[in-house]
Length: 264
Image (cartoon, rainbow, N blue to C red; front, side, top):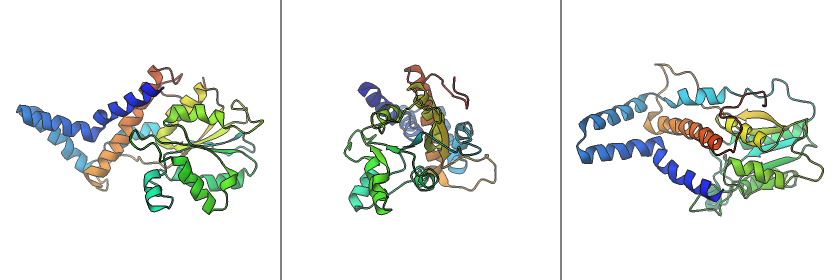
């Protein structure tokens, strides 16, 4: 498990589209490879104007629509971390969130709808260099400000989605069952839902997808221009998720490379 974690972090340093394009450009310039230089500059230029990441994110975000009608009863709620800025929160002594904050914001309406359902917030630190800053701690601080700190169960040791599924089971309240046929609402970003569903199913969880914070939309020539940084971020989200789906499948952490609504 540790080896997979370390290798995934090292690989992503190189595979991140922004880093990869810069690496290729530097090598091409140093070696005098004009054709490769021109191709890399052309790709960067296209990314200045067009968010190609939408093409990768669309199939991910549309794979699970979420429940058309919320069930009357559920076994519980699992909220995956990733919407928190743990180090920034510690620095400013105030809960800080990023563009995936919808995962966390969904907690409030869900606990109103299901006042008796257990809620597990799972998220430690995915950082190699700063593992002490943990996402679940940020959520706990924010929920305390809402007067609801004791309403949730916090799992703060997981470093990736695979560990989310394993360690979530370790903090189950007495009497709860991961295979409960009423199902556990699984709350995470829409682009991250296919991998999350497949991982949790592999571990024996009965889950109901509850996707949040969408990023993609149909690509068009009239697309508002967000610049190279914003477009690279969308592309990185898509590339990382497709790589994650592939890596998790071939390391036997999932049963399906691209899972469907119907569990196998």
